[in-house]
Length: 175
Figure (cartoon, rainbow, N blue to C red):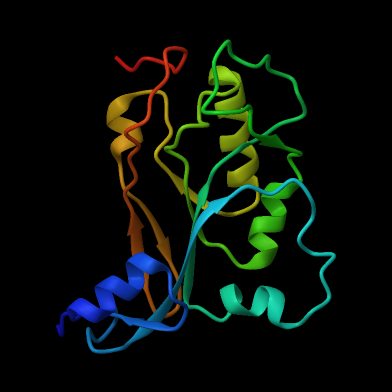
């Protein structure tokens, strides 16, 4: 299998759309594209935008990734005493908006994971799963949270290992 060059790896880290990548394929020689973004912090619907190019950038990739920098719930859980900077949350329907935009994978290990405690984390896990998006980095044990999750698409099978170095005092402790 041909390996990516340094320029390809740098482009991947910068999230440049249309980057040619190599991964696990049927033949090992096929190429595919990845759309990579930074934090997705959305508080309103994305699907109301009518510009055709808006979601096409993400949808045109064979696989698309984002960091979910917030939680989805309807204020069932209480906010914790400390947050990852501010208490980030959005309506649960916004998980479906990420799927509508074309995202296949989300990283959940970040400084906002514990903003609403374990109940907020669990609700977000449920809503993201219901939207059909693969998520990694959050579970009820450290071993589970460390597991890579996989998204399989026509041209690619990609894994998503995630980690976060930020931790505040109210974040859940793992066994």
